[in-house]
Length: 430
Image (cartoon, rainbow, N blue to C red):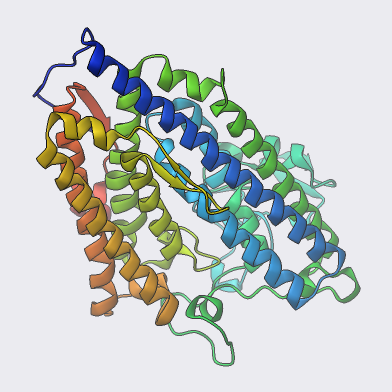
């Protein structure tokens, strides 16, 4: 954590009726947008479930492609919700079920021999639950004959307290749909067609889900795992939708005290912008030139993941969200509160948000036309590295302005997430 002890620039006018009403409207609209975003994420997950059911009923290259496309589409609204995580304990406590990463995929399924056969840090590293109906770990026998919700949630997910043991959520499903991405930072294999993302991502065959011509072994159990993980994703998203409805636990936290609501709102923006996105998700991987540090690593969708994180930050500041059906939600915005206090600062924040958006868009365009994100962060790729670094620099710069917003709104001491890769870069290599 990076503590920001910020001086009060302008007093919080709790007793002034004109100002008192505005923060309440801002946090109410923030909660309304949160509900809409999670509703869209849930709707996307239900489409994903339909496509996965079609894949399992009739495995083919076409049904596998449709399931992958549904996964990619489902990520768009979800990635915009990540700004809600920091500062909202209800969301933060839940998030690990749906978006935990990175994961040790050998716990789930077969892996390439280059993955290795053991890990000092994880006893479950190559347990391969899909291939084994019974697991023996630490002298304890685990019945894995049914790959159901109980096994995934209560036994495997974060087993041994290890966060790399990911059995539920988007990334477990991603691995099952794409398989390992074995291309690293190098070129795409010859013979593959499509976009850079399609050529360079994992290439699990549809026959991994076809009991009649099974590749990879245990196709029926792989289907069980995929089906159970998808059902859990829907249940988890339904829970979070309920949390943002009227009387929901997450909504209550931010709307019952507008000052605390604004703190949650700015904690989310600043923490995602700085420590999480600029630091852990981008700078760390760039410093190490390591594709294992990219967020959507199996699908090579990381450029979109980062891009929509920035869109989510902008949604909160501008009080605006474009739903997946094209409807645009607009309401009382944080921008308006800041403008009333310091119009120049509001313009500064909006300009910096737009600059970051432009840097992310450039990265996204490069990924869609030339090379994937993991290729951009490769050692020796000066141009690709520069594109990623420009986005990191813009994120850090916008965070500085968000810190000024915290001061102008007199929110006192607010903690934003930090990152060794930004705050203590030498420590990364120790």
